[in-house]
Length: 207
Image (tube, rainbow, N blue to C red):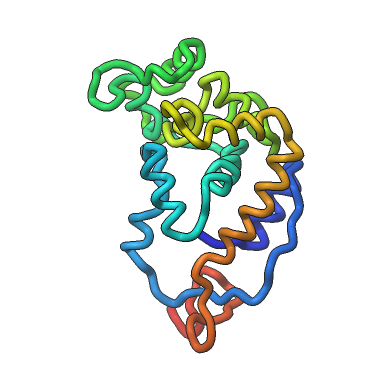
C-alpha cells in the first residue's frame, strides 16, 4: 500500500482531487506473502477492516476515505456472488443489498455464470471520481460487502463519515487526499533498505 504517481494522475484525470505526492520513497526488493495475505479483502466485515487499517496506523476516516477509490473501476462477479445467492452460508441474499440493485446484478452475474465477468464498482458515474460511491452505499447499492459494511453494520462508527462524504464531495476530496498521503507513509524503507528503480516491475540487477 503506497502512493504511486500514476495513482494520482488517474484520480485527477477522472475529476478527483489533487495532492502533493511525497518523493523519496524506496522500492522494496522482496515480496512479503504475510503482508499480502493481510491486505483488506472485499469479504471483510467492518471489525476486520478496522483492525487491518489500524495495524498500519490508519483510522476510521482513512478507511472510509480510501474505500472511496471504489467510485470508479470494475470488479469481477465472483466478488459479489455470495451476496447474491448465499450470504454467510444462509442460501439467501445479503439483506443489506437493495432489491432492485440485486435484481440487476443477478442478470449480470447469474448463478453458475462467468465469475470473471466485469461490473462497475459504482453504477451511477462509473468512470468519474466523485462522491456518488457514498450515495450508493446509503441507497444500499454498495457492490462489495466491504463497501456496505461501512454503513450497514449496526452501530458502525464509520456510518457518520459515510454520511458526511455523501453530503459533501469537498469533504470527501479533502480527506481522500490526506489519507492517500497517510497511506504513502506506511513503513517507509530508509537508509540502505530497498532501492530506487526506473521500472517498478523489476529489481535493479534482477531478472
